[in-house]
Length: 308
Length: 316
Figure 1 (cartoon, each protein chain N blue to C red):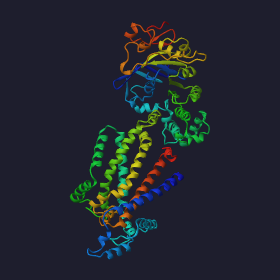
Figure 2: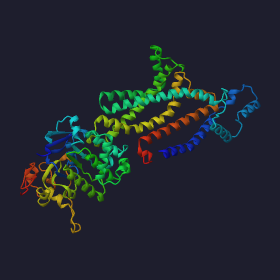
Figure 3: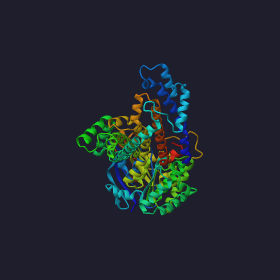
Figure 4: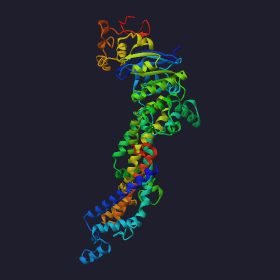
């Protein structure tokens, strides 16, 4: 198990380097120059060149990359060009909002998704199954920005139970968590249901019945346990999506977070911030995958031994 | 009184009727062989006895199955579950897929004695270790904490046998227990299984298509053909004097030492398809002695000079 963990950790190093190159290149291939946003319209080329030199933007790309990566590894992501603050500070300020929203949404998707998926699989073909499947279809097709608006209209404007927007109190989290989480519930429930139904057809399940094991025990201790393996994969892929893809939800609810930081700085061509935020998201995706691999290895001996 | 008495059961799955009037009995401590080609209904008969037919979408339409004085047809599932694993145990066809791949071997054997004998975790483990040793597996403790994929097919089948024995059942249903294994270990597994069954005085319903296995292990034999009983007799009689032409053909198919090369032939024709069974005796298209009557009328399973057979023209 330890060697499995170390192997996976080592594998992340080349992935991290590749991702950092891609992030760096993407930002520099985007048309537009941050210097233009900083200087007055009638500035001379000399003034522009001086500014470019100040931020190191006059050096060749590979040098800029080396400097950026070297600094990034020591925790220095440079200074924001427009916001004129250290990028690390900006990220540190936004990350707690993203993390609390993401973690709660993930928890909500996991618990509610597995429970509904398992119920639907156990009562396959019954009204419970049909109702959950209909809700799952709705949940996976309704776009989150629209769902967010509907929730705001109902629970914040009409009923006044929760704040309309912002991140000032804990109850401001509930509607955004629901908005992001419901899509996850649909996804997790669907995967759980299908995986359980597939596992239920396996020979060893028939053998468990032949051993006289009570059906609820078969479903929960054996079938559900197998079904959780693909669910873990789905969830680990979703960690990155929730942190970065929550942009629209952060926008609808006017919440701070990595997503809104990324969008704002992209619009302003604030390279250092865009790079820093993207790097954070990439790291989150990598750690999510690593976490998923570790949980799978803990659950399935065949994964641990590299058989599957 | 017989331990298990199966009386003319018929089975339907959807629109198909794969079993038609299967009848046999097993006494306490008896080893009964159930032989026949693929599709003859051997495994379905096992499913009926285990009460697992509904799980594959089938239903028993008529007949009765009495186990130790208790009618199993119509028995509520919750009561049937108390029999399964405890009094009637199953040894399945494919050991490679019969064990839960992500649960320790030990836990899967312990589960049976914990569930049915109410043993504590330690007692169940001690019992499982003892069973593993009885199945002549070296290093029981290491096997107890192994996962299924770390074991060979033969080892896994021994574990499945250990699971079947774990709650001291009265009857074991073994559904082609060695079909999925290498020929080299088939005989060994059968031998160990039969020895353990004999030592404990258990009844065994041994399903196989291998007449060699039947000769090696069984007291009595039921020959199935296309969902019906063709013949039933004691082991000595069935080999010495088969009453049904199908049984004769089966026995003719056993290879013998000193046999002339090329003289070993299969049974001509093929097993009829379940969607288009022939009228009358279902063996008639493949039978050398088939006459008009065989094509018109279903032969009843009748008492012959010894045993029972379903043939209009068996002489004795």
